[in-house]
Image (cartoon, rainbow, N blue to C red; front, side, top):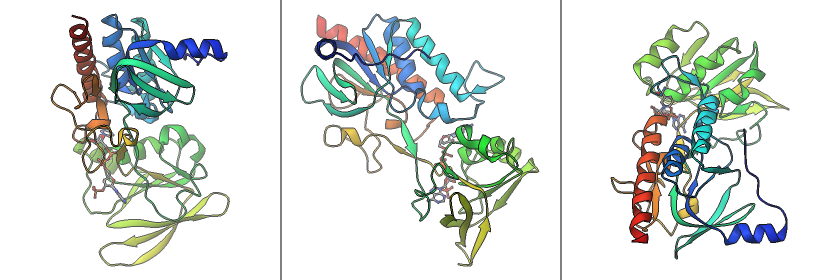
Length: 324
Ligand code: NAP
């Protein structure tokens, strides 16, 4: 993948910091990169700052089956790469960096990243969301040593092993099905007796001979020595507790929007989702939000991509109006 890295000499860094982009997009998931396709095509001088991972959550998704125009489905990382290529084809630049501070108080807006400062006339926030943690003892300790939030990244390590998947939504079932490629057995542990996931994934998971379900149950603790060896379970109806041996625990319990960066500068709801109008505008002129950072309702790659396109069209119109 062709990433741009920040210039290293002081003179060059200074000139990079003096530059004012037409548009900076924070985030490189379907929202951010779709915005970049539209912005590049509108000849805006556009920079995408990737965040931790090019592609955002889609890069950690095993199989994307419902992105229109891909009837056979495609791997999440491939979708991310295609989006990046598409954005770059129209001149958008993609920079690997993490933004750690923003000043939306005056224009041009100033963003601070690990690699330096950036200035921009307009800003699209497409920072997405991160996996929600269980918050139980052992979870942090064993992350990367049996606890995972990404089946695509870590499934391979569990060849012929037994794993548990926590959660009952689309992600839990989709990733449980993916994990059966490697694991000998996958047990889905859900806190209710009814799945949140849609009917298609439910059917596929229930029909998969390697997948079992444990209902009405939560994980209270993850235990092990150097790696995960067991989970402590509690039935929420009976209160009964038990211990289950397992080699790994995959957690898919929903997401938290990545919006802390904007606290005190932009309005957000009590869960942290940024507030925007039907045209993706925040209350600060020149700042739009696209994708999961502002969307608690749909949270699909395609809806995020649509919001990204809409935000970029709005940004272009707004920048044109500023010039007149
Ligand atoms: P989600 O729909 O919010 O589901 C989260 C699941 O985790 C729920 O079953 C929830 O239980 C459970 N949960 C939450 N906190 C928990 C805790 N502390 N302990 C135990 N369980 C907990 O999240 P998601 O599955 O990541 O999906 C997010 C969005 O992406 C959804 O809109 C989904 O439709 C979409 N998505 C779509 C696809 C697809 O269409 N192929 C694939 C993946 C994701 P409750 O059910 O009891 O609340």
